[in-house]
Image 1 (cartoon, helix red, strand yellow):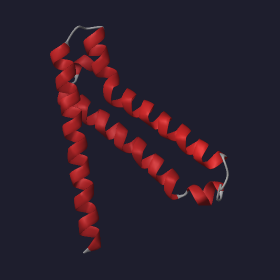
Image 2: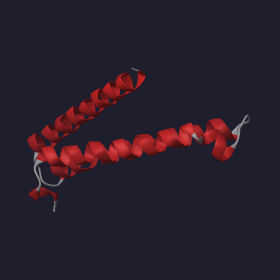
Image 3: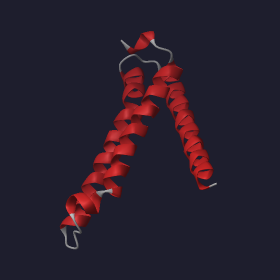
Image 4: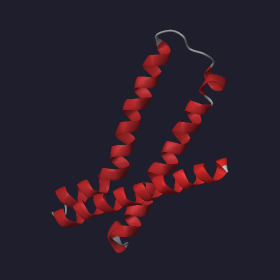
Length: 107
């Protein structure tokens, strides 16, 4: 199904999906004290570590899931590598855009 889309578009969608996921996690961090209250005991750090590990897994699946399929099932190593590079480029572009937005909002 994804083979009908260009690698650049798939990379954009992967980066966008990761950006949306990271925005949701960031909102959770920002509003964490309001939602859960202050957690000064063992459970706060434990919850953070579970969220951290889960986020790493979700991020890996979003960015590396389809390249893994391209490499492992379809034996298309070059396409898989290009997709990871394109996704990385889109993520860098999003970072630059965010930095510009932050800079412009301060002025």
